[in-house]
Amino acid sequence: MALGRIVIAGLGAGALFAGTPAAAQFFMQSKDLSGTAVVGNEPGLGPDLPGATLEEQKAAVIWNVRAALNVAALQCQFEPTLTAVSNYNAMLVDHKTELKQSWDTLSKYFARMNKAPKAAQNALDQFGTRTYSSFTTVAAQYNFCMSANDVGREVVFAPRGGFGTVALQRIRLLRNSLKPWGEQRFPRFIYPQTTLPRLDDICWKNGDWQVKKCGAQNFPPAGVGVAQR
Image (cartoon, rainbow, N blue to C red):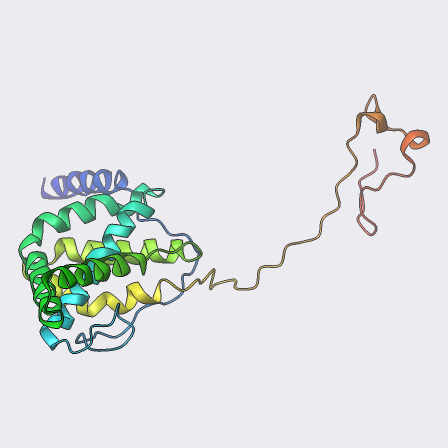
C-alpha cells in the first residue's frame, strides 16, 4: 500500500514537471560568463560616480541590476520561457523597499555633488538614462537574455532585503553577457559547399533530364555515386 502511494505520488510529480517549460538554451554549450562578486567600487560596473561612498556605489550596483532586468523584460519577450517580464514585475513588488532606498541614496549623492537642485536632478536623470542604455545589446542578445534570466530568478527567490547581495554577486555576469559569444561546443562551424541540380522546367520532361536543352546534368557532384535504376 505504501509502495502504491509512492508510485502514484511519483507519477503526479512527473506530470507536474512535464508540463513546466524549461528555460531557453540557445547554444549547445554557452560561454561561461560568470564573474566574481564585487563590493561596488570596482571599475566597469556601470556609469562612474566620482567621489561616491561605498554605500552610494552599492546603491548604483543595485540600480544597474534593476535596469538590466528592466531592459531584459523589454528585449527578451521573444522567448517566453525566460519569464523576463514576470521576473521583473515580481522584483518590483518583493524588493520595492530596497529599490527605493537605493534610489534615495543615489539622489542624495547627486544632490551632494551638485549644489543647484535642477543640476542635481539632471545629473540623476542622466545617470538613469546611461545605466539603461548600457544594457542595450543586439549582437549579444542571446547571452544577455539568458544571463538576465538567471539573475532575475535569483532575485525573485531572494529574501526581502537580499537584493543587494544578489546584485553584488551577479553584476559581473550581466556586464560580461554584453559581449558577443557564440557556440562553444562547436566554435568553428564550417558551412558545407553543396551542389544542387537545376530545377528549371525547360530542363525536365516527364521526369527525364533534357540534354539538348540544358546540356550535361550538373548533378550529382563529381565523385558521388548514384544507384542504378
